[in-house]
Length: 305
Image 1 (cartoon, rainbow, N blue to C red):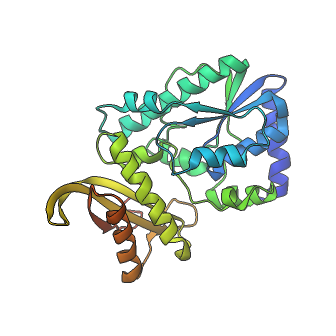
Image 2: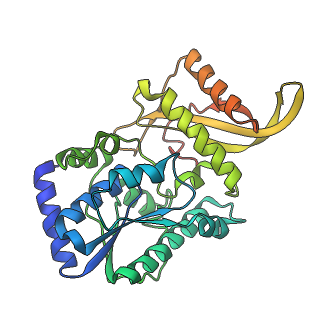
């Protein structure tokens, strides 16, 4: 375990040395990794940093408003509305690895565009150690590691938390006095809800995953999971009222873990599971059934794609 105070000092010095007098943009997602990277970079280079939040249309419920509120102290914060561009790029894509590469490339192009406006030469990212291990080990490409395109129009990429595990990043977040909603937030995949939708990514499927995930996070908070969410698997027959429906199948997943490298599915009581399924099917007329995933990691990954 790193010493959080020492790490902050060393990371700030490293960022200053790498960026120098140049400008940088930070890829801000609202998760603890990118938030810590942003806080470190802001402390290191101040007004030389432009925080950029790209609303991909694949984010958690209320994410954009939360970003604006949490990072309002950074006057240069930019919110980019890019939903249409991401959905257009993902149209017809069904392979999980291709999804990640498409999203990684689209992210880079968005940041390159923003960088030109602020004359930024560096891109700061919240890549952590498990991201690198899984990408380099061919488990799955992370949009900010193995998902990056070969040609990137930046002088360099700055990754201040690249050698930390998630629990260590949280310790650093606390040392930086970040709000609890950031420091203790459940992990969220860089490619967003795209990896919680099996098959082609469409606005309808993403909206189902977003609303169902919101329900899961609320209902399972008392279990203190490492990560809890919902994914859209496909369609199946169901009954709503007196009518047959061919609706979405939503899978609920809740796991315990220390660093995300391995994980165990949580044991949830029947009453909780019934409450979750009742809310999800009741709030969306196009959801036909809800299932609970009991698979550990390994053999499964935490996310679905």
